[in-house]
Length: 336
Length: 230
Image 1 (cartoon, one colour):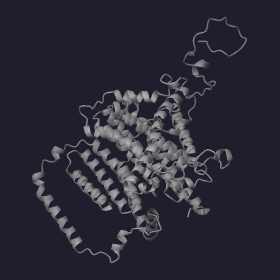
Image 2 (cartoon, each protein chain N blue to C red; image 1 turned 180 degrees about the horizontal axis):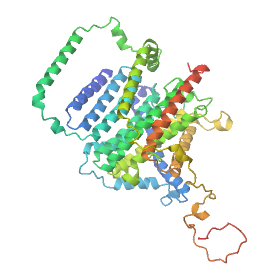
Image 3 (cartoon, chains in turn red, brown; image 1 turned 60 degrees about the vertical axis):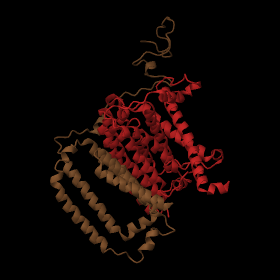
Image 4 (cartoon, rainbow over the protein chains, first blue to last red; image 1 turned 30 degrees about the horizontal axis):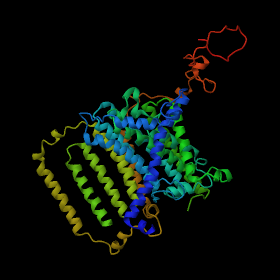
């Protein structure tokens, strides 16, 4: 067995198996996230949510997927065909690609690379291309306006997110995701860096185009935003990509601030639960807040969104970065 | 294996760079430019410069090219009109190109590598230090003044751009967020019981449960308990 794994074919087979072991649960997670969102929103709005297909509506996501598959794929006459088909694929692929570096437990990452956090940041900043290409290739004014809004919004919030990541990196002294989690063995970074956690969470909402920052698809003025012209599987790919990105952002927040696979207290009943379960549980908690925010807040106006990003978050995160650096230097807490 | 990967990425890089110049649609040009950036990042990775590869993707693909695409998509440029004077301008362009080529040739003809360059090229970072740390050491110790200076130049450019686009207060309408948040009376906070909405406490909508059989109203007596007074 070991001999086979050492050959190039064996290595390839192993990598594919690892990727499958991560992506299949992820896709099932995406399916049930859509179900959970409808259930939670239903409960918050005093409705029942999906409850017809299967017990508690548990088979609803699969019924929806089947419905999407059966529908006709429509490509608008004026569309730029190749780009129109490519855009949802880009969105979906990028959402999957980023998971390669996520450490689910100590040493459980498909690729434990030195610059893991930069890789994640790079992939998440590429997500805007799927949207912007979709908006342009559709040759529709609603889709185009949605794409423009989305591009401006994602570029704006990436800046403050970058500063949040730099602040965490200052406290860790490494770009490796596993090292970032290990640095939180004694204390999760949410405690000393709580304001940064808040900024990171709100930026993640903006980065994934979720309510209250879902202006790119603001249905009251843009019909459905950048994916107005999409139908059938191409629409489903956008949908899957968007929800996978939500889970990815929650995983990123978990790694940066919530101590990854570590239990909250290092004592008996908490340490019985294995690390990956803690990791999944923390992601679920983040996702619940994502949905909770959607049920609570009305949509931002566009100028308010830009003001929040550039005039509030950017200066604040910059000042907090300087404060953190000064504190680390003064007290001699800088990691070696 | 590595050599094959290098030639693959280098070939795609050059091909997409050619497509940037020759493609008819400016949006396609920008997309090919992005492909070129990606291949350059892959070449960095092959050379062992993982930090530079990631920064190239983050800065150029994630930010600069997005803004390019943004501008190009919004501009309504008639490229047929731009191509019209090609015959007339071709000689001038040819002369400029020839001069540039000559200068490049002169530079490369007299180029001499330092004696230890060949060894350094194969091992860009010292073995025990990771790439990012090695770059940081060089940048913040040996070249700290140049690094700060380049930052200062970028700051000046940024201030210049802001000054050029800043309009006076006469044309812009500003929202005073503090005043708006502080005004009173516009938001009512209600505390409905658990599992009930505003309808159940008598606001906006009747309760959802099925209508009960008509009962004799008790005058006074108990308050609350049932909420069907609409």
